[in-house]
Every structure is written in C-alpha cells, then in structure tokens.
Image 1 (cartoon, rainbow, N blue to C red):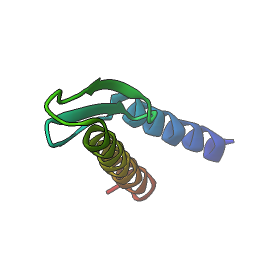
Image 2 (cartoon, rainbow, N blue to C red):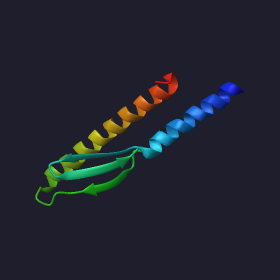
Image 3 (tube, rainbow, N blue to C red):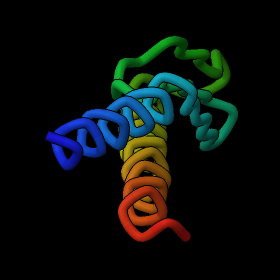
Image 4 (cartoon, rainbow, N blue to C red):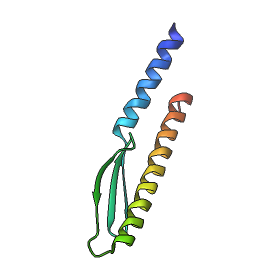
Length: 84
C-alpha cells in the first residue's frame, strides 16, 4: 500500500515537471516555443527567408526543442527515482 502511494507521489512530481517545462529554439530568426507536453505554443517566422528556408528552420527548431524537453524530463525522472 505504501509503495503504491510512493509511486503515485513520484508520478505527480513528474507531471508537475512536465507541466512546467517550456523550451525555445531559434534558427535563422525562426523561433519555436514548445511545452513539456510537446505541444507547440508559438512559432515566429522570419519574413526575409524563402519558403524552403523557413520550412527547414521550423523543422530544425521543433527537433531541437523536442530533444531539449526529452532530456530535461528524463533528467527529472532520474532524479525523482534516485533522489538525486
């Protein structure tokens, strides 16, 4: 019973971390902001880039932000599990 309560508390900590995470990535003046649920909150384009350059920049920003979010969440989960 106590183990289940402990697991529930750890899951709540992880959810709280996910809810707080917000990452921003910028490439060539294109900016993407994502939250810990891996949802895009904002995209700002650079009007001086052509369509292909903007497309590539958005893709790179999204991939960078996703990697940063995944790394931060993994770090937080490890620290919650091991009490680091």
